[in-house]
Image (cartoon, rainbow, N blue to C red; front, side, top):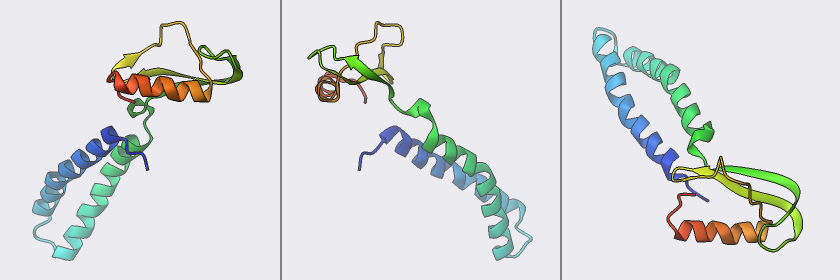
Length: 121
């Protein structure tokens, strides 16, 4: 399983932020029974953090941006195949550059070279 550490870190941060928010709800509902106050606090937390979790786990802003095209000529080996190119990551941006598509095999090699050069993929 490949772990997206940006997502994981944001998720852990989200858990830490939920503590004072839910504790605040429990303070406000201190006159209620513990069970009722806890249920209300969890419902409020669910209403808030559903949207935060949804962003964390589905946002393309946290992913590497790839472009895939069919029937391209590989930039490296010249083979006609499905082509891949890395467009943008946290520290790599080729959105304005001339596209260089690679077949799957050459794309994997290029990805390893970029990783060794410090590009976050």
